Image (cartoon, rainbow, N blue to C red; front, top):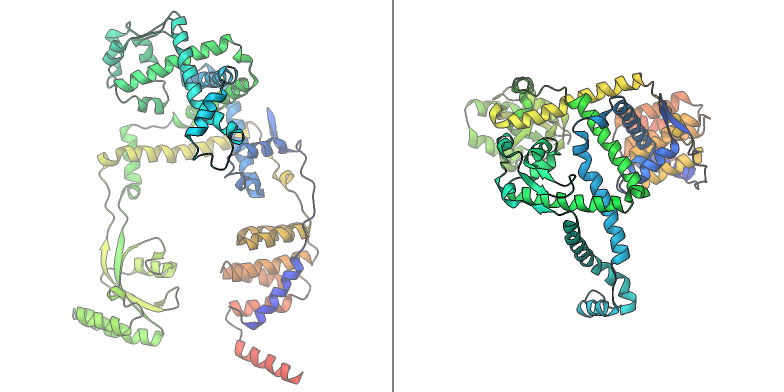
Length: 570
C-alpha cells in the first residue's frame, strides 16, 4: 500500500522486541465482587476457569473473558440467593426432577468401588486376550501391554458383576415388574389411566421402590422434558421402568454401605442441588410468568411476521466499467436498448464492454444483507440494489472493487409469510426465547439492586510493564490476532503515559488499523493523535506520511524523485 518509504516503518519493530519478565499473580483472596450475603474472590474465578472444558479456558483467561465470567458468576450468585429466599427445595416438583440425578451419583460411585474391590484379572485370561489381539499390541511385549489389557477387559467384567449383583438385589427387595400393566398404560392420554390407578407397575417389599399406576401418573407431569420425550411407546416405558428399578436398588444398597458420607458424593450432590435450585428459580421468575396462550402466540407472530417469512431478494443485470466516462456512455446505450427490449443486443454490449460479462451480467438472489454475489461485502452496492425501483436502471456508482457500475433490476421477489398453523411451534419457541431474554436481563438488574451488588473488575487487572504489553502485542500480531494486539497497545496507553511508550503504542495502533484491518477511520484517528497528543518525536514524520497516504494526498512519484536526487548528491 505504502511504497518504499513505508519500509522505514518496520524498523520500529526493534522498539517492541523485548523479553517477557515475570510478574506476580493477583492474590487468590482478592475480592472482585461483593453483595449482601457473599463475595467472589479472584481464587474462585480462577477455579471456575479450570472447571471449564479445555476448549473454552483460553477464552475466559483473557482480561475481557474474565470480566464476562465474573458477570456470569455474579448473576448466578444472585439467582441462588433468590432461590433460597423462595425456598425452592420445598417446591412440589423439586424432588421428582432431581431424584434420578442424585441416585445416579450414588450408583456410579458404588459401582466404581465394587469394581475396584471385586474385579480381578488372571494371567491366563490376560494372555489369551493379548494373543487374540496381537494387532493392537504390535511391537509391545505382554508385560508392556498388561495395564491396557486390564483396561480393555474391565467394561465387560464390570457389566457381568453388576448383572450378577442385580439378580441378588432383586431377590433382596422382592422385585416384580408387571409387564401386563406396563403395556396397558396409555401414554397418549395420561388421565385415562385413572381407572387403573391402584394397579401396580412395580412391586417390592420396599415402598420406596414399589410404583402404582396412580403414582406414576403423578410423577409423569414432573419428569424432565427429555425423559417424557423418550417415552414414545410402551416398550420404551418398560425400559424406563427397568432402569428406574435398577437405579433404586443400587441406590439403597449404596446408602446401606455409607456412601452418603462419601466426599465425592456429597460434593456432587451439593452441586446438583445448586444447579436445580438455579433452574427452578429461573423458571419461577423468568419462564413461568410468560403468557404462551394461543392468542399471545398469534399476536407475537403478527408483530414479528418477517421472522416467519421467506427472505426477499432481487435479481439484477449488472454493467461494470473501468472508467466513469465509459460507464456514462454505456448507460445511455443500455437505457435505449432496454426501452426497445433489445435483449440480444444488450448481451452483446455486455460481452464486448462490461467487466462483468459472465452469465450476461446476471446476479441472482441478492438479499438485503450488504453482500453481493461474486463480490462479497459491499454496503454501497447492496444499498443501491435495494433503493433502486424495480425495472429501473440504477445510477452509476463505484463498487468495492473500484469498478464503475450500474444495473437493471430484473426481478423483485417479495417476502412470503408462512401460515401461522404451520409454524405455530416455531413461533412459540422463538417467543419464549425472546421474552425470556428480556425478562432475564430485567430481573438480573433488579436483583443487582436488591442485593447491592458491587463489582471490582479493576482488581482483576494485572498492570504489566510497558515491555510486557508490547511483547504480548507482538506475539498477538504473529498469530494474526490484530484486535488482541490493539487491546495490549491500549493498555500501554492507559497505564504508561510517559510520552514514550504510549507514543509508540498509539502509532502501532494506527499502523495495524491501516495495514492489517483496513480500517481507515480508526487508523487516521490514531495517527492524528500521534501528531496532536505527543511532543514531536521520531514517529511524527511516519505518522504524517501515513495520514497523507490514507487521505490520498501523497505523491509517491515526487517522493521517489526527491529521494533519487538526494542519493545522487551523496
